[in-house]
Image (tube, rainbow, N blue to C red; front, top):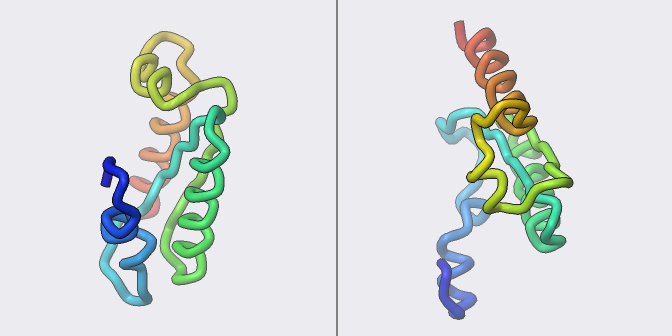
Length: 96
């Protein structure tokens, strides 16, 4: 999935395995603001999940890149942590 073979990319992409009636958990998609391709790919995945009526939430994190999302997670004042925490609370309330 991380090489140069586009066939590997297609086979690794979860969007290619979506169909109606799957038993999948809720999705939280966090998209770093530094890469336009990430925005496009995640928006497409979000729309496909919605099309099949799966529970999906999408957040754009404009002021972070992929590394800073990971590195800053849980630090005091981290907005991504608050997003994740709120999302977990929401899905926990829905599933109880």
